Each structure stands twice: as structure tokens, then as C-alpha cells.
Length: 433
Ligand code: IMP
Image (tube, rainbow, N blue to C red):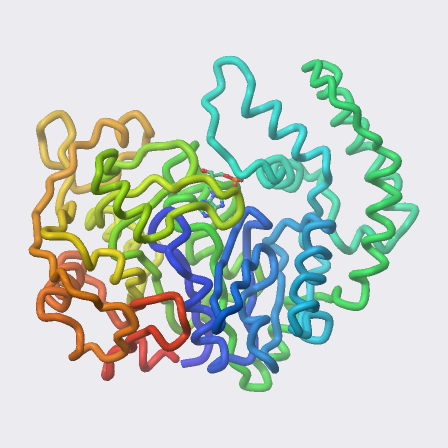
């Protein structure tokens, strides 16, 4: 097996950063395929905490080629700042990072447009990360976006930029946004940033094709999670890109026939940031405990995450649209103090059991979860690295999730450090990596 996708099975923040970092040294290339600096991957190495937003977590492994694929949207100021922070910590970013010439550029006015659409009367606010992600993807699909390659053709860039800026100015004036934007300063700054990233830019689809031709192994790193996917998520409370496994192909130019395995990452419970339906949300003391024990605050925005119980129907759904070969369950240790652990095993809508994930947010909001309570283990699992060392009830909890979701649990994370991880011997996960 050589090329593997690692992605979130819930609403993001499942701990993919740690999983990608852990597995990265078994791959030659790690590629991001969608999203932008709305993502926040936190990785702990010893005492050091790294928060990666745009750059694939694989950058933390020396010798691993990191790639930002064409499906990603790039805020150049954010990229350069992240590069500087990593370089200051001794990570050799300039040497190991390549950026797609087909990725789209986020401009500061995209944030302004986002503010407008979030605040508009009669519009449901999505609770976005306010990074301009959605408006940049809107320009991409509207075929008026500006790509990294355009930055290196100064005349074409100026023409494209001036048209785009004029559009945004009209919108800003029409909706009386009242915020002064210096469009020519943004253009000047973009030209300066472009010169700085130029050595890193290439046709990354060619780079990946060459890597595969040389027998190199690629890991595709998803951002956000399947339930935030623009098509398969809880629309409209989603991000604007294809976070599900299919996005790995469109977002990098690697054909579907070259994908050998798909690893889903899920917490042992579930969280969500931003608005939108959340059937198993726990708004009581138990939810507070999960937030406290799991330190559930957004890596990018610092917002407290909404917390709830493991949702089997949701996981079955994300397994269906992604085709997970195996799951890594993270943050098992967060459940250590609970007497009993509710797990959602089914959905009811208007009193009747349903098998399918409803398509509309109103139906999703109306779901009544059916819970089964499992006994807690009430002892520390923190740092355990062998499956047989887990308390029996923790093993039973995991076996229950595996049986109900129909997906192998190949890995378990029991703490933020690299070595606080179990990879089950004989699992498909072991075979994939
Ligand atoms: P956007 O991606 O900023 O447009 O935000 C759309 C929705 O996706 C909001 O609910 C965000 O909170 C959520 N979101 C975006 N990125 C992440 C992430 O990395 N983790 C969790 N939620 C995210």
C-alpha cells in the first residue's frame, strides 16, 4: 500500500494533526487538498506545541516533502507568518514545502465580504472562522478567482485583480460596509508576498505524479471533517470545500485509481465549532466535563467547542461517503472519569426510526438520538500504548464502537504526545502504514 488519505470522520478537530504527524515518517510526501487557514492542527512534540493551519503537519518530519495542493485556498500573509514561526522553531519549511500554482489566493477583502454575508438580514449565520475562506471559493467557482500562477504574470495579475477588486468595492458600497479598504495597497502587498513564495511554487500534480512514478508514498491530509464537507456535510453549516475523501483527488490532481487506503479519524466522543445541527450535543455538566478534560477550545479561533456523545449513525454515514478502511479513535483518555458513557446508536425523527442521514438542517435539528449507556472504566488510560493494557471496559467501549459502526478501529490515541498511541497489531491500519 502506498497512497493513503487521512481525514476527519466528524465535524473537524478529531486530532488528525497528531495522526498525520505520527504516520508521516512512513511516507515520502504529505499533501493538503482543501481548506485554508481555517484549519488548525495542533501537534505536541515534547514540550513544544505547534499549531499548523495551512502547512501540512508532515512538515514537522525532516525529509518529508510537504505539498499544498490546488484545492487549498491561500492567504499569503497567513502562509508567510506560519512559515516564519515554524522556521523560528528550527523546522526547515522553505526546503520541504511546495505550493500548487493552481491554488486560489485569499485577499483581505474576502474577509470583509464574509462579514457582510454572515451579518445579512434573513441569512442564517454559519459561525465561520472569518478567514475569507467561503468568499474565496465563491470566486473560484465563479471563475473570477486569482490563482498563485497568476501572480507571476504581472500584467495579467493587475488586470484580474483590478476587476475582482472593483466587484468587491461595488458590493461593499452597496451594502454600506463602511470599512476602508486600500485596494491598491493590497495589490502591492500581494506582489511583494508573491516574490517571497515564488521558489516554492510549482505544478504540484506533476510533482506528485513524479513521486508516484519513483515509487514514493503519499499521505493526503484532510482538513475540517466530513460533516463540514460542502456536499456531504450538514449544509449550509459547512465549510466551502470538499473535505471528504473525494476531495483528495480533485484537490491534488492524483487520480482515484492511485488511492490505496482511507483512514478516518474520530474522537471517542464528538465536538463541533460554529453553528448548525448537532444531534448528540450535551449542554449539561457532562458536556462541560468533556470540554474541560478534552481542552475543547478552537485551535484557530479559541472558541469553546460544543461537545457531545459518540454518534454511531453519523459515523456510519461518514464511513459510507468516504469508504474508511480503518478508524483511529482519539482522546479516549478524556472519558476516563465518567461512570457511564452514552453512545448514540440510532436516530428518530417524529418518533420513527430513520436509517438515512437527513439532507436538511431542519430535519437534522429535529433528530432525537437513541442512546445506549456503556459503563465507564474510571481509571487513567493516559499514555497507554498497548491495546492489552487498556482497562477491560475501555476495550469493551471500543469493541462496541467498532461493531456498531462496521469499521475497524485500528488505532487509538491516549494523549497528545507521539508515543501516546496504540496501533493494533494485525489491523488494516498497520497494513496501510
Ligand atoms: P469556514 O470554513 O471558516 O467557512 O467555516 C465554516 C464552518 O466550518 C464553521 O462552522 C467553522 O467553525 C467550521 N470549521 C472550519 N474549519 C474548521 C476546523 O478546522 N475545525 C472545525 N471546524 C471548522
